[in-house]
Structures are given as C-alpha cells and as structure tokens.
Length: 276
Image (cartoon, rainbow, N blue to C red; front, top):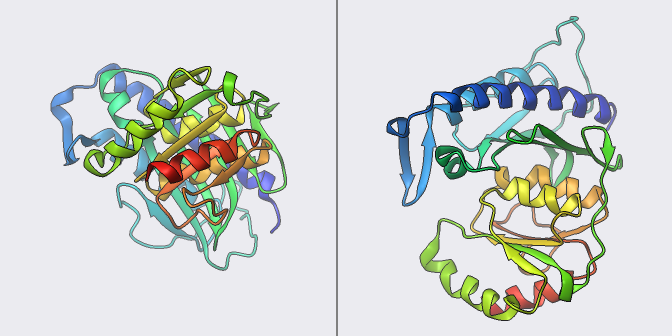
C-alpha cells in the first residue's frame, strides 16, 4: 500500500474540520435536539452533520472506497479528486472507511470531556490508517501501518507501569444487563489492587490514552467497529497490544477490545475471561 502517510495527514485535516464543526455546534447546543437510539444511547443532528461532512471529504481522498459509519449516512462508494485535481491512488481493492463522527455523544450532550472524531481506513482485517481527534483538548492522534503513532507531530509510546501501579479504564457499555456481572467482577478484581480505575465515556479516546501512556490499559465489550478501529492501530503503533476478550489479535470483526501497554495484557485478559 502506497501513500499511507499522505492519506493519514489528509484524514487529520478532515477530522479537525469535523471537530471544528462539532465545537461550534456545542456552543449553542440544546438537549431538546437529542434523539434516543436505544436505552441510554443517544444521537443528535451534530453526529449526523459531522458524519456527512466527513464522508464527503473522505470520498475525495481515496477513490472507490466503501464506508462503515455509525449513523449510516454513507449509502454508496465514492470517487473523487483532491483540490489540486490529483488523486491519491493506492491499491483500492476492498478499502473501507470506518467512521465515528462523534465518539462520546453522551459526554458531548453534557459538556463533559472528552469526545472525539474517529476515522480508520481498513483493507480486509488490516487497519491501514487511524486518526482520532480530541475536540476538547485539540489533540490529533494518528498512525499509519508501519509508521508509528503520533499526537500533534509528537511520537507516542505506551507506558511502563506494572499492574500494581496501573491506571485502568474499565468502560460501561450501553448493554448494561449483559455487562453488569462482568464489570462488577472486574471492579472486585482490580479496585484497591491497581493504581486506580477510570471511566471516561469514549472508547476512541481511551485507546489513544493507552497509546500516549496516560492509561495503562482499557477494556470494553458491546462496542462497534467505529468505536475502536482507529484507536486500536494507534495503540499498536505506539508499542501496545490489542486483542478481543478471547485473546485473539483478529479483533476487527468483533465487539470487544482489550488494549494495554503490553506488560499487563495477560493479567487484564485473564480477568475479563474469568468475569464473562
């Protein structure tokens, strides 16, 4: 695959543009404009507007790509050109953009940081490009396959804490009935036995924080591909490990993620497997 760095930098521009739109809309946002997708799972016109903007921009970066988007606004493949009339033309067989236009919608509704834009380019089970833009902190995390991981042009590297000092992120997915026994078991296992535990409300940002060494590990189930695809590549390129809850490195078709600094991966993986 050619031009991955060029594609990544163009995607960073798209993510920042979408983030600027979301930031502007947040200033005058009203909770009356929120729709309920499922129990405790929300969407607003901002999610949809961001997605439409992102999809329209991505269609001119790489020709003939498909889309997996959280809000389903992309109906077909697109083909287009950049502003200078040229095209970025990698081998495009089965290339798919995976887009979360606003990860952390509940945070956004409440004005609670963080919330982010997440964009990945995949080919089969390979994640080629991952970009996550933290709207609140103006931090753009990005990686391309084989190109390491970066945040605002600074290199990222996972942390080095062992389990006793680790800062874990154990998220609470919307499927509360199914996941409640698991999270209770995980809290009983780790609360008081690690550095501390956090829940931040954005899968994409939790993964980026692992990549940056701000968190040492993150685990969550019942999430979509758009939630984790970009962040997973960023963790891997920063030196971390990402698997599903069964320990498989082929996690891209599933609904669970365990991401760590590598040093504590087996401990957290053992815990989630026992908790299920």
